[in-house]
Image (cartoon, rainbow, N blue to C red; front, top):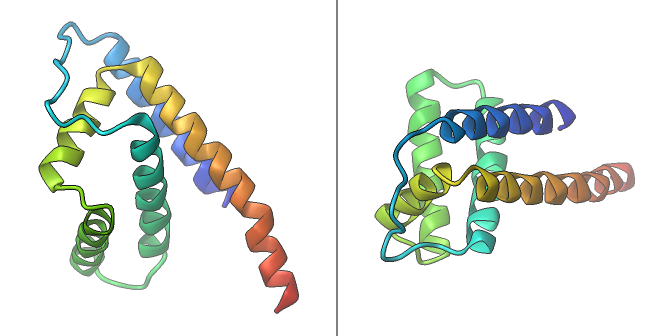
Length: 123
């Protein structure tokens, strides 16, 4: 799990650097998701990604399973694909906000880690 968290930090830093140098400022989408909603959804997306990536499936099967899981998550939160992706693209142009989003995700994953370890110890 720690390697996964480090990978998220690396991705976040890379995205922040890329978009700090971007010349174009994106306009806010009409249906911009809140920072908190993005934290909740992206955390679940990354946990799903970690689970799917460890399955012994072909690349195509993993992609299909991942897409189905993402669609279910968006449905769970009653968010359209377009709304999510336009919000995500907007936040990518806002490196400070995106850094805040991923810091919160990492903190929640770190807080979740002791719970998971405790559950495994009881089994």
